[in-house]
Every structure is written in C-alpha cells, then in structure tokens.
Image (cartoon, rainbow, N blue to C red; front, side, top):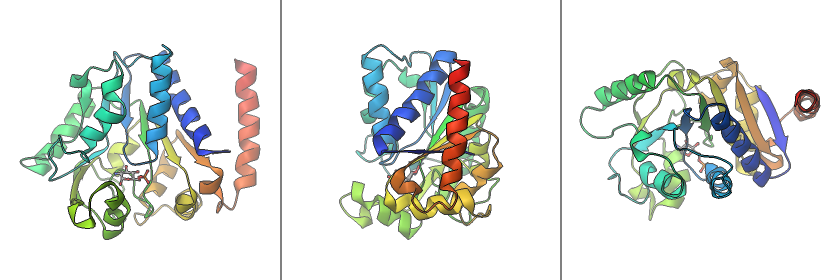
Length: 261
Ligand code: GLP
C-alpha cells in the first residue's frame, strides 16, 4: 500500500481528484467505482470545480457505486442514488444510464449476482474510491465479512447505524440492511484509492494499515491488493507507528515521479 500523509483534508480531496482526472485523461471510457459517506464529498466538490473549468469530462465514463440502503426509495434524500445525483452526477456530463447501484428490491441474492455480472460486462473497475467506517468497514462490509465476499445483502452494525444517524432524522430511521459489493468484488478493482480524514479515523487507520489481515477489520484486506493508495490527513495519520517511514518513502517516490514528467 502506498500511504500518503497530507497536511489537510483539503489536500486529500485535491490529490484524490488528481487520481480521478489522470484516470479519465488516460482513458475517457474508464469504469469508476464510487463511494458515499461524508469523506468523499470534498473530492466530488473538487471534481465539480475542475469540470467547471473544463479540466475533466465524465461523458464516456461508467460508474458503479459500492452500496445502497435496503428499504429506502431511490428518491429518498438519504439513498445513495440521491446522494450521488446531488453531489456529482447532476452537475457533470455523465450519462445517468451509465451510473449503477446494486438493486434493493426483489430477490437480493439474485440482485447481487446481477450486479456482479454487470461489473464483468463493463470490463471491471479501473479505479475504486473507498472511505472507511470507524469499525473498519469498507462499503457496507461489516467486521466478520468474508474476505472473498461478493455483492450481497448485509446487515448493518449498531455502530455503523449510529455513525450514519447524523444524516437521518433519528437512529430509528437508519435502515438495518444494505446491499453492498463484497470485499472480493472490491479487490477485483485494478486500482484502489482509500481516503480517510479526521481524528475519529486514526485508530482504525492504524489497524487496517499496520495490523494483521483479518475479517474483523475488513479494510485490512486491502493489504492483499497490489495497487492501493491511501490518502490520509495528519489527524487520521496520528496513530500510525511508521508515519516517518511512509513520509520518507513518499518523498523518494514523488521525486522519482517528478523526474519522469
Ligand atoms: C458508510 C458507507 C461507506 C463509508 C462509510 C464512512 O457506511 N457505506 O462506504 O466509507 O460510511 O463514511 P464517512 O466518510 O461519513 O465517515
């Protein structure tokens, strides 16, 4: 994993937007894996800013979101479909028919299989954006999820429901069930970018980066992927034991990259 510690949450969103813009420049037909939650909002705002300045286009891109709540209408303010429409899709040139979410109606096991099939049909995800839950979840793969899991229904933990209650009127209105890409699905992405900011993510960042690979910390499965970048602000990085080493490696890596451009 490439661990990049940046001075602020703003720098994290700028660097994340750089990676998305580079990807779309290299391949305008890219398949992007997108995430929801509070953390990616700043990245989407930065992408919008660059779109407004004609620095990036989503015209030929295809997107797959990680997850969706079961039990909310797509038009519900807190559905992840609404979130993405509001935060990004409605303001850029993306073709909404090319934006995908796991279905949450009917037979959910079959819906998961259909999502997997459409991912394969699209050629797989080129760049997957991830946030991280305070319990180590990625997408809605809660602790204990199989590291080989595929898209399926998954019950949310009380902690995740409490964390996400800030977006709802009350804890009771937070759904108890979700449809989520599995950890195996996420690991199939060609490149992965995880972003985490703020002090409340510092303990879990230490666990998934420096602890053992374990289903109890689902994000630790990323240690098994050959191409993962983790962007952290100083607060999220404050508990890392080897922060100095990551900074040294990053300084060498960026000077090599600058020589090549
Ligand atoms: C939700 C999403 C995750 C996200 C997590 C953290 O549970 N399903 O994809 O990573 O929230 O969100 P935040 O960025 O708000 O801390």
